[in-house]
Length: 389
Image (cartoon, rainbow, N blue to C red; front, side, top):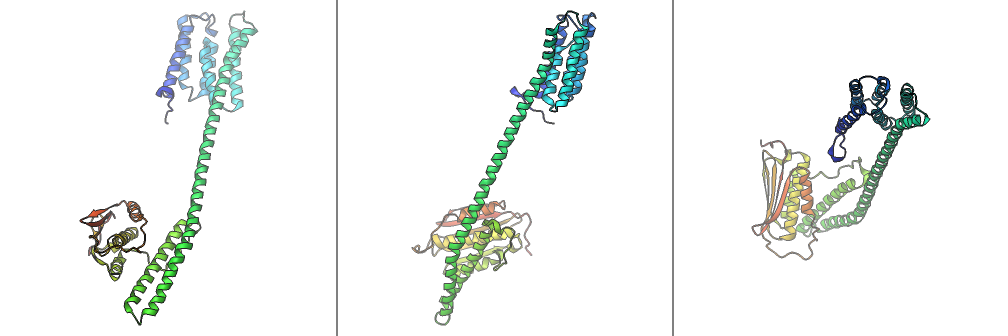
């Protein structure tokens, strides 16, 4: 059990040790001052001092067994008249118990002990002295109970505040989920409509150009395939952003990107007039699916960046499977031509997205200028050696 720390870094047991020592010292010292020593009145002072000290020492266990300690101190109070020990014991009872029946029983027992001490003590006691004795016994009990109630109310208020904070957090999350769903719907309405028109236009261009211009028909087929892939990826992202679609698996219309499609990426770049080469060491297609998708995205982003920012540059793609992971490198040289003014704008989020994707796989991504061009390096650990056979 972990002890709570009080002010100054003291623990509860340290406070109890100090309190017990003070009560014992007061009880022993009070033996020579007070006119009555309970049932031991008239006995040797040393005997009364020892009994008073023993009664006070029982307060060391007041937190473990408050009721038992209170009863023992009541008996000691009757025997050796130890009012300070009884006050501390009654305060502990009031601070510990919440059942009114327990408090009333122990309070009545302590009052009975006080009356018994008065009855067996000097015969000149009066009602005023009796009232003072009862107040000295019940006062600590009431104070302890009041302190405990205040502490309970403070804890309850703190719990209420924490519950409200959690509820506020949940409401914010719910609002964020709703905003994602709204963005997803708008994304689908705007982007899917435009890309769908491109796919349909490319399909019509292919059909109309097959007889007259095979090269134009091939380019139209490439545009159509890219548009289809973009729509599938958009649908996949839409399923993540839309809460109502969680758990609903849409029928797959196209295979998920993996390492087996790296050749198609490079071939597609070559068909668009880009100089691109691919070198694969090992068998990345045997790696886990998330790793394969990350490899595909890295190569795709590298080819796209080279086409945007370094037109005409030669692009080299290296995928190397090692014992500790897989390394992917996409390097392009300096631009060999001017950038097309009609090239699509760059959002600047491609490399950020790659870094986040690879970080989820405990990998790293570095990118920057290299030998007049640009290079993207990524390393993804996979936890198992690749199959090189």
